[in-house]
Amino acid sequence: MQLFSFDYANRQFRVDATPATGEEIISVDGVVVSQQRNFGITSEHTFVLEAVGEVKLIYVLNMRAADVNYELWVNTERVLEAAASVSVEQQESFTAAETAGALQPDQLAVPAAAPAKTTSWLSIGLIAFKLLKAVQVFKVALLAASVAVYSVMFTLEFALVLVGVLVFHEYGHLRAMKKCGLPTKGMYLIPFVGGLAVGDMPKSRWQDVYISMMGPVYGLLMTVSFYIVYLITESHFAGLVASTSALLNLFNLIPVHPLDGGRVVKSLVFSGRNYLALVALLAISAACFVVAWKLGFYFITFFIVLGVIDIVAGWRVGLAEDIPPLNAYGIWFSVLWYLVVVAMFLGMIVLIAQDGLPGSEIALKVLAS
Image (cartoon, rainbow, N blue to C red; front, side):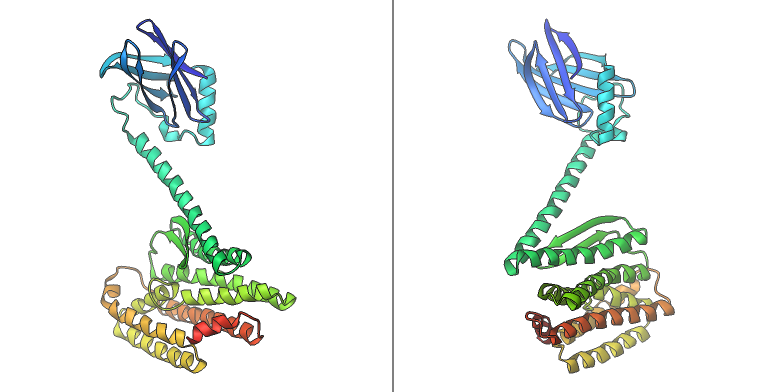
């Protein structure tokens, strides 16, 4: 569809544009000399005309004034500067494209004069939009890579469900961030590592605890759901998914930063703001160490020790952080919440393994390693 046309040196220049596809075509005397795709309002085309030389056409669309400002350069010299009206059909076409997302509202406020340089905030915005698209592609690529890796390790069906478990866990974190009023940037699945929910940093210790715990809580809902399906149908597949989900979420609750458990324990200890809180942590850790050792969960005892070392090493840094702490009620509630969720995941693993379900003993072997 024709956007505008003009004459120069006894030649007719015509510019056609299709906003929906971003396609732009420059023709001289009916011959196409330049063609490119552009979703912005500022455009630049460079081409060579016989007997004329290098030609550059720059134009800026101004929807508010219903016109287009353009410049024509020949061999680095500006030979023409003018404006042309945009037809009613083109106005409607560009309006429809704006509604569909091809043009952004802030792109409509354009100076009447065409800029000598095409580098502008619009260009930066378009680059940012392309980067955003690249990020989305990167997320999909990581998702596909995770499915591929777990498919090699297990089966395709189990890999898909495992990725679903990870996504549901990270979704719990994202929901918690949104409920706390924190901007989120989505989630990433990383092969062999798990997932990562990205958003702004919590503004209080309670927000940190809440966001950290909601991932395992959503994971617990998923684990319990598959366990119920296993009890009702005696499905081998459902039982293994429940056992694996419990193990993965339990691993996330290990008290080592930056895992969920590490963030929770740090928020609890640093909320005390005194050495009494550190002593209480050491006492609780010692009790958990003894219980885990007697149950044969040596994997957990190892990380309890690492967690204590992590807290002690970062003690002074944590106290220096200017973040509103938990009150006494919040501390005890969070401690109970954390221990109950850990106990439920351990219980799921033990119950499924005691049923003699083939494959479920792997989780117990990991805990006993």
